[in-house]
Length: 89
Image (cartoon, rainbow, N blue to C red; front, side, top):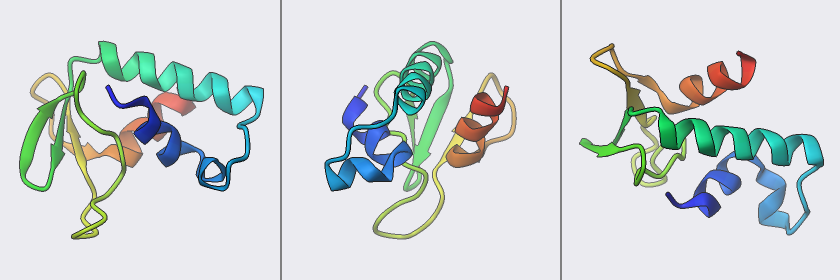
């Protein structure tokens, strides 16, 4: 799992070299663990990847299309929605 990619997605201030707050750091760590244990797959640019190796940006920087997450045979959802729903839970 590429933790740097998830941090860059979740905390735009990282790109500005600003340390995330303790609350944001806790959310990032939680989402990383949740993702690694999920058993879900990510669809990036037409190909499905295992969550343990998938990058978790919300959309393609090339096509602008939202990445998708598919869990246990359920319909796929945009990865941003999937991550947000876990944070809300």
